[in-house]
Length: 278
Image 1 (cartoon, rainbow, N blue to C red):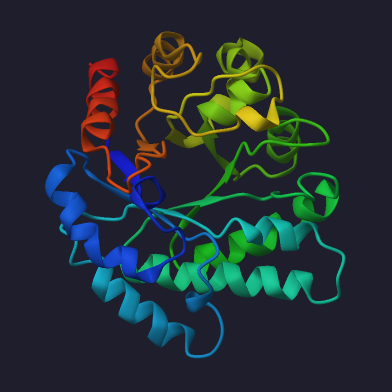
Image 2 (spheres, one colour):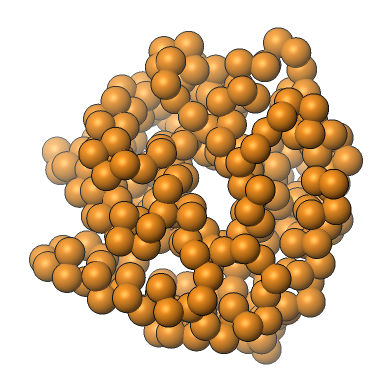
């Protein structure tokens, strides 16, 4: 197992390319095995000369001293997949392939996708559902393993959609986020024998906590282990029993109000996961 930290967890200014220049400094203080690159909303990746832009960014990132085995695709891909404007699908596919180019240059092996996302969320899930084969075709071309995350919903719920996808696509794989599942009161469903078909398809875990009730949108913050109410004893008991052999990412926001990164808290979460896996 590799314990990863999301680049988003240490970003002081989201979407600022200059933040990547100090990843090497973060690496000196973090006991993680690598990073999950968070590619959300970085317009500098899209547009003309995409390959050249990606190459320049990849060269910068690869100097940080740690690998990038996992790559989180731009979240707005899901928004466009749900959209109804004439160019939405084309935009989503372009964003997706641009991210695949960068992921390949970083040496990433696994992709995390919000198949649905944002204000539209899963209100037009049928459109998102039908786009999976095309997205899989693109990721396969780059030798990347595509996984669909159990993203929060404002219409149905993530477990329902994972089951629909699993029933339709025999090759589909998932990333399971503990915060997202707790938000919908669905963490316990992961442990049910009847949902083994979902558990068996999980190729990556996001280990985040949540402190709030069912679908309390104003509480949807990414917390560290122990700062919320996820039963991680049960989660990791299940992980050990089912023989899961993939990696884990901590996405929990770790920048304080003064703009400093709380390395102590991040390292504590990293060590807690390692303890759970013993």
